[in-house]
Length: 212
Image 1 (cartoon, rainbow, N blue to C red):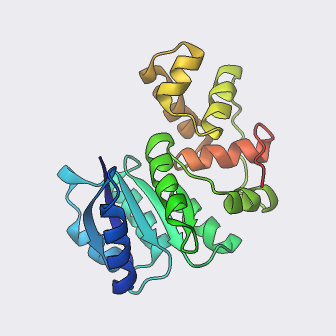
Image 2 (image 1 turned 60 degrees about the horizontal axis):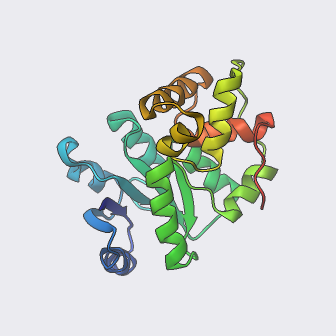
């Protein structure tokens, strides 16, 4: 069971999403809020959700500010999935650069939303076809001067293919903890916020290509 949080200022839409996701056998809504400030007041470190869906445009504390604040207080353990009616590069980039693990538009089907949640929970990020096209064409942030070694590059390519730590461990005959250690060290070495930052690095450096 994946525990979910929803941060959405439109009450009718939030209620509809709660009902939709609660009807899914794999999901349980444990927290809902109308903006980022309310979310921060409701969070309890001892019972955090696994994935939080965060709307971009909200009063008081919007999506990017919410993601940034959350990361500063709680780190990277919980996955944050951006949600918006817009998919312009500026909107996507601001959410990702503040620490979101992925992005889904509100025009997405319920099946795509389910896939995004499950994928971001298992692999640490979600890249839809639209967002993949954006990542391929946009000017991405400056790369770190640090270089990855061949083993790190191989693991990063598998991460980009949305493989879980367990799947990577099986393929490379490593322990799951070893793969997780590699992932953490790469994040620190490249000075990125999370797995999405690793994917951005891989795309810009030519280690991985996404098909739109």
